[in-house]
Image (cartoon, rainbow, N blue to C red):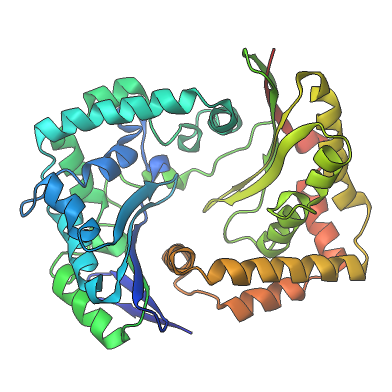
Length: 411
């Protein structure tokens, strides 16, 4: 059972109370890389790095030591649609975590010397990323699929942009976009909601709501992206061919989302018995890794299948992948096969939810988008209510030869 509260300034709070000595906490902010354009591309990711470099109350070392020094772990990440600060700590240090998040979100000073050093770190991150085709291929796919739309550019931004970020620009962006009305404090810990609300009132309640329609922040979400189909081959000197086949998929609010999530798990989920793993790896030995991913955004979604295969097996592997996607449309699952897939997915969800860090992040993102979070039992019930016809109908709406795009890295 989840407990909710909203402060007068719009800050949302969600709690999952568990009997544990460990507390999992974080702050989700509804700001990501798609909320940037032009010279600002990459600024959300750079802010995420720079938040740890100094506040009006602490220097960088004291920020990093505040949680780590008592045995906890502090971290952060940026995606296309959100930024998250989070920590794992002993329950007795939950207040320490909540106070630190507030300090770095509302009082960061972005010291010039620290910012210049962090630029070099991010530039090396960009270089490192480009050295791994299995990761780079996803970004290039999105650049081609959403060309001309803010969803197209990668989260890290360009080297040129990173070099030109200034402390003033970072502060201006932080003040206008990272406001309480865009934030969710998410906690999985043995703490009462009354205590948690009092802590949030103490550390977050004194800051103004902020303008949800602030100029330059989130105005890019008014234009729905249009998925563009393509076939693209990039010559790269690699030991294997990297394949990415993808198509548009349901957005986070779509009625098709539940069925499509199950379809993705059947095709290329983490289990060794996924259809793609059996068809491409187990049956023919064409690859070491083949997997699918479903990424729902607020107004669109993406479905990918990735495989790293022997250079001589490129076309055969793509054919097998297309065949498995086609089977989801042409061959309705038997009730017994569907029930097996549903039980498997329900078990995976339960195991994943048993990890406090996973649950904290999952409920924070869900509450940010829906103002409500389904329980594990409710999510399981939705999955188990699907029928073979429902699954095939959803597959038919999204899969088809004319819908697929392919990007290949090879010789």
